[in-house]
Length: 281
Ligand code: DGL
Image (cartoon, rainbow, N blue to C red; front, side, top):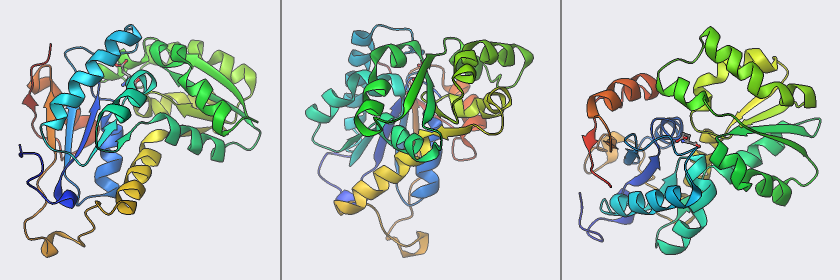
């Protein structure tokens, strides 16, 4: 951990959080796009899922986690959780003196680019869809598209159990997405960070002609562009040119460390070998 202000801006980490493992899809995209950046990721696995919780409670968790992550003196914060983005992004951006990025607007931009017919869908947790954040973002930036927004309770729990393509998850996806099939959409935004892990099942149900859009890559591109614009991206050309090699990403969890490292490692890849515990209440 660093004392705020004692490190050049470019070398400060990018902080990121999610309710659990789902934000690792965004972490993967950031690591791939900006391998020279240092990432500090916090998964609030002790209190996930956020989706069914009241907005006020998720907002409180988001502020608490942001404060914890600020102890690492980050140069930016990525809210890698749709539910937390939906209810807390604006407040965090206003309160913190670093750039704060969410996953909703980047996802909506990618969705608008992907559709040809103008009929699109978004799926998310109950908290995200009920907040109306996607509906507002689409109305603001792609007012001509016809949006089917569906809450999908239960899908996150399958992913967190490591089950992404069983018969049971297939049946649930079929039932939850029936209105999107009926609406004839041609692009589906995965408005929950866990859903990219269900891509195969979602694609089986929706059919090959429906483009699945994940906000993970789009969010990473937005972070890179913003940091580069403000001159704080680490643009060093590679390991050999750095004064010090880039440290490995740091993974923090509020829950069981072994579980986080095991399941997280399977979902993210080899960069996640261990995690440290942080206590938040
Ligand atoms: N990470 C959450 C999201 O993207 C899904 C999991 C949860 O409900 O906590 O909405």
